[in-house]
Image 1 (cartoon, rainbow, N blue to C red):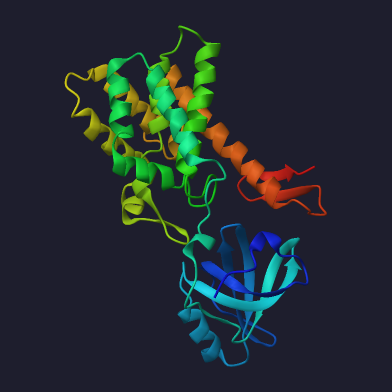
Image 2: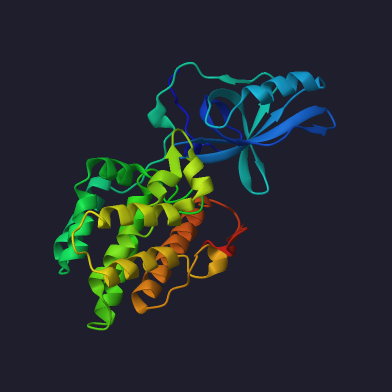
Length: 319
């Protein structure tokens, strides 16, 4: 079946007959007319909540619930409604089933930026470096074809910011750009090359922390080690292959990776202790938060309210 309806095109009252990916599902609950459960549906244009309204037979609803797995592509018929100022799809009993044929590209959210152009910008940054060891290190990453493939397709997060393929590359470049500006504000006061390479590599562990199919999922590595530990391991393995790499440069670069979440309560095993590390931390924080605000405001486009509420941020003015 060819997908003809996309989430960003849906409006209240629309009849739905299309394919979607299962993003999540909640447990079955009892309501006055039977059994129901909530789920999240997504495609490459966004996501929407859906409610499956089952009948009085719990087993029937249970069978549907058990059939649906996170990441499955499903054929849904239903109607678009609204709940708490958000669109939702109401799905009546038996109006959802696993799709047999589909185009996977309809369900993979990608960066709106040209990832090849983003990578070209990073290559130019590499060429601008003066420190031979840091330039060699970054070049070893950028000439590793497997790394390039992973870097161009990895997301920067599960959901919070840049949560799409190419998101990690986009975010890493943004952090590097912010750090470049800071090096211009404080000329000869900061080690530009150290800061820029740290910015580009700060989240590099995310290439193995996440995997992307129709949804972004965390890997076993992500659960057990996390991207900071994995990133340090990846960088150290590259450094080990560079003869006479300066010990202090290595330690300061690793410190930037370890401290880029800032406070220990935010996940950093150590807090930033020199200007370049502080710069990467705040550049990372700034890009992530600004991107989150922009994404939420764009998603709320057309809302009757002048603000929206986000559980992690709070009130966001949308006009």
